[in-house]
Length: 218
Ligand SMILES: Nc1ncnc2c1ncn2[C@@H]1O[C@H](COP(=O)(O)OP(=O)(O)O)[C@@H](O)[C@H]1O
Ligand SMILES: [Mg+2]
Image 1 (cartoon, rainbow, N blue to C red):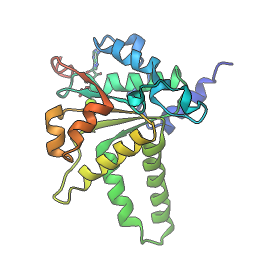
Image 2: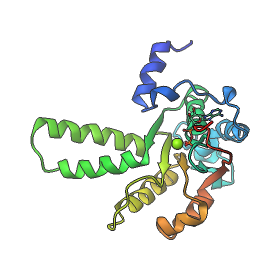
Image 3: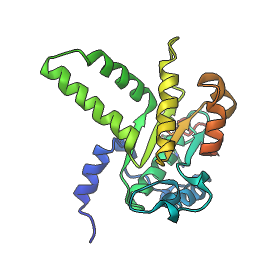
Image 4: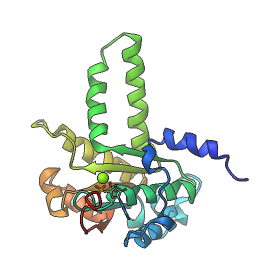
């Protein structure tokens, strides 16, 4: 039975998909990398671990489990657009729940939530739970699009760097793939984030290096 379009509309908002990106799909994209993305979507069942499928029915090569896509390139090359089209394909075609969050928002919400933890006013408690919901979706959604890694505000405490490590490793360990967009070149991941991050992203992500001029300027 076809899903009522109103249900899809409701889900788009629940999944945090920005309004202007909700119509994006891989079959209408003209990005040269779209077939790589489609192939990944077609193989999603080998990347995502669900209790509906016994582990012995996964391919012997477990390196595919939790494997995500890393969209790399300078601003305006279409990373967010292509990653969102890929994310929406997971929802519409593979029928799994998805979630979209800018990494900067993940960090600022985590910090705000800590500042609310001792507050007793109903508004503060409601906001704490609202944030908890969003952070929890980012941790547990079958597929997460983490947008603009590298644009978050980083301080001496290393909080943002550490949280990225925790979030990505948790998702990977649980067999929940992540789509990342970033302008941080692969060689810098181990420098900006934890030293081990460089090898982690090489092993756990298929990289899509996007080149071209800024499409916003066109
Ligand atoms: N394949 C495409 N063809 C034409 N315009 C595109 C394409 N992909 C993205 N754009 C447009 O280019 C601009 C930048 O795209 P965006 O996905 O935000 O890039 P990035 O995330 O790399 O900065 C947006 O206005 C978007 O609508
Ligand atoms: Mg972007």
